[in-house]
Image 1 (cartoon, rainbow, N blue to C red):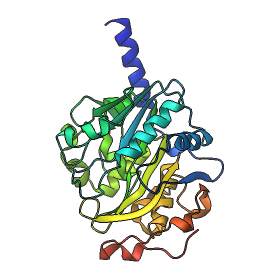
Image 2: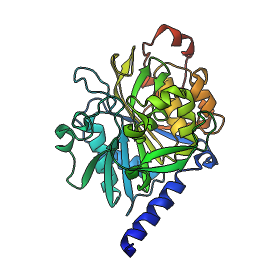
Image 3: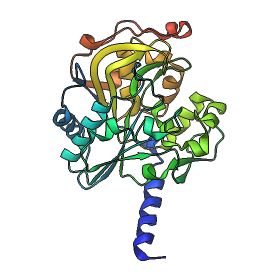
Length: 321
């Protein structure tokens, strides 16, 4: 084996090992969550996003960054996916902070043809030429030991570009979900697992229990930062068949559960009544409102009551913030 290839493989292995252990990543003080106003997708907020990430202590100088948006399905008339403008803003913010490489990667849960998602020319056309787009469904994967016990799966096969990245940023869409009540940062990790291993729409994870899979991935995969597209979310029969719900914000922060719990409150839910978020609060920080410090926009100004299937209406919360 050539020395260069040996070093590349050694780095990949080290990064894969480093994916584990997020349960120990507990902050000594309340988790920061920033609400950045974005009334429409025409604004360039890359400078503001970079400032928030820097204030949160995210160090990107010389790092390889992978942005993981949500591209579950393609219906142009529905707000299903992370908007391409938000992806571009985040990618360009990373370049502003000195990232050596920025990759946009997704293993779409429904569409097997990546032209409908991460390789679509509409996305490629607004990205800096330094930013790469990769399909995570069909490439190589790295075996990472499952740090959880709920699915019974001994390992997760994580797409190689994810394992090879220094920094993983989760970028979901703010949506209701017809099985899980809400789908946000934690659920977004399904898209780092290749469809050629897990099926469409990640059938193996569904068979083992969606909540179980979410929680095991949350214990196993280290996410360094989160950006939720809440400019226009989806309410009702999400994550695909719902309707648009304007909120006008990006939710940013280094702790996935804190970002999810804050977004859930903005959507009108009590995160402690959503079973998988409640379970995640046993090993991840940020579930309770007193565990979070919010910067930027006043959350009360952004709060919206998302419509949802009947079985989840009991998970709605009282007045927050």
